[in-house]
Image (cartoon, rainbow, N blue to C red; front, top):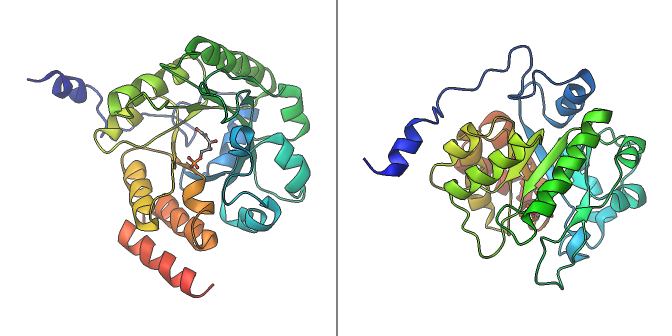
Length: 292
Ligand code: 5RP
């Protein structure tokens, strides 16, 4: 039997990991504050989340769709479960009256002008995250990247700080141009993040064996959106990620670069929280887009 088949058999992807007394896998033995923050990011009814990722400016400046966050993103806030943004955008543009949980980008360094993006540092102290009432913090981990060890060390330092204050850490598995986004790589990257203490992990979707990526990762996985796709394809990708074990999405460009971001984020919400099939979610998108 080929090696891949042997591997697959041991993931028991169809057998959900137990989390007695709490709705999120791998989180049932955390402290109250940590669980409370996770229960704000993830909807306890569905066990899932639609995070809206708008942190792109931290390395690429005013990304298409994010030029005017006050105009393009603030109106979308009611339709997401959590916002993933930088502290600069939070303080300058996101209304403090918003009841939505904020997950703050806590790494940075190189800009898009540099070849090597993996040379990041921790870019925010945990006490500022506390001051900002963050529901979580997110950091890039470059498994296989040139600065792999440094980025892993950044994450473990952030996890130590998060543990002190009860703030969950989202590890974002960054895939360099030279790395293949297949299940084998994504299993490696996500598992390393979880083993080293990340409380939830953001990763890309892969068409083959994504269920093994999710089942081998002992903490919740949220699917990254990636570059803009036609709406129907993005909804299909989100659907398959959820059906194969993701606990939600953290999508950016596929929402805010859509012609009708409001219709798109609602359609993503239907897929994530209600497991609406992609064709029906796309119909819903078209209907809402036409009436907006
Ligand atoms: C890169 C990131 C981003 O900055 C962002 O969150 C990506 O969102 P999307 O790919 O859905 O536009 O995490 O890895």
